[in-house]
Length: 412
Image (cartoon, rainbow, N blue to C red; front, side, top):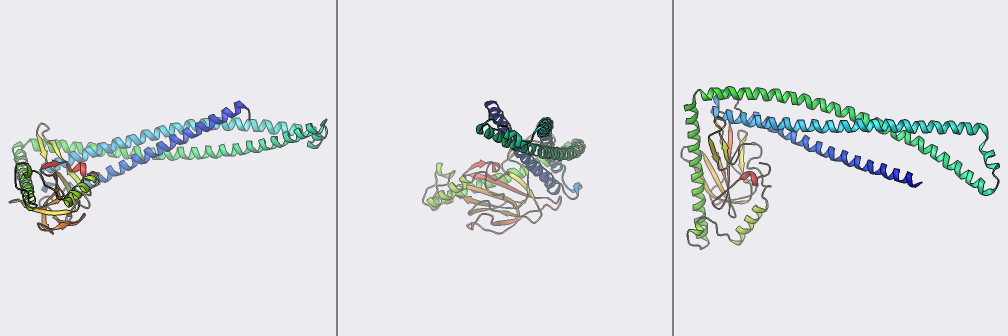
């Protein structure tokens, strides 16, 4: 093989490697986008199932407004992801079209060369036989070289034929891939059109709901104030019980109550091991329900009707199915039972110096002092009969410091 032929061979190999790597990367990206799209579609189905009451007229307008807002947000994410998939397919289709054009061109060149070679071979064969070609050699060395040439020529013809077959197969595969990609793109575009139509309908419903709420602003404000008051009552009791638990725990191990040790647990070696294990599982902790969706996140958020109004959420709210059970996210000990006057029940579990709180339970399966294991059922989550919604309020603290459960629980 000459130096030019060798360089051409190396170049072809490099181009093939880069092409395969690009195809693999695009396939990986496409799979990642498809997984995201399926997750968003599932979330929309769960929003429809869990956040919208069977009889919408029974649910309060604030819940409907928040549910619509969440669904619109998820729908917009779905449209963006589907657009990304479509754009990636466009790039793949363009790349395949270029490859098909080049392969057609290469195939034509190889076929032309092969035809010329066969024609010359036939002409040479008609002029003299291979035997005469060998016998007419002036010496043995020339005869050997002529025989070697004939063998190489035969091998070359064979390689050219195989190359034509390979390129033809590759061309056929690329054409099939191209047709498949175009069909997938058509499906994605159709789904995106459907999603956009649903989005327009949801935005219209949201505007109509906004108008109906703003016509009766005083009633809406009353609902907001009532919910804020209930939330503050729960938050206050949660933090009060944590402080009492800290004092009791520290006293039990012989630590006198002082300003410094009334806000932090003094840990025994065993409690330190549990706390360290809990901390090591940050971002990997299980959900406090077997199945559900987050209906309200942690922190400050804008009001769904009046964006100028801000709300504070010290935990997260998870919507789930009627009859669902709250379950412990980690091993620990029940340190308190919540019972808000006029409200529902709750459980606090200590994991070293971390405290998880599960509120809005109708029935409890544990009592103060019980040891619990991961996934252990703590109680039945309350279902509101006026709107059919079943929601768990979940809080997480480290000593007396509020934590964002979304940072600790897996994909919350």
